[in-house]
Image (cartoon, rainbow, N blue to C red; front, side, top):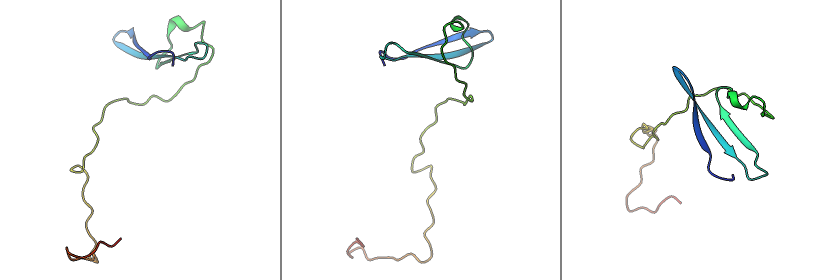
Length: 87
């Protein structure tokens, strides 16, 4: 990338539509990612692609307290604390 991506929003009351602009360092190829067509770019677009819209959000990572422990099978082999490890 030539520089950090730029972020903006298209206002279409009562909604706003975010977009992302990424400019590459290879002769300035520019990518504009948006969920709607941007009116000012209609005559200068070389390629377009459409993707299925997915929700974007922040989710917390589960911790060991969030994951239930698996029960030990009835045939678990118990070892003495002073025994050598099995490896």
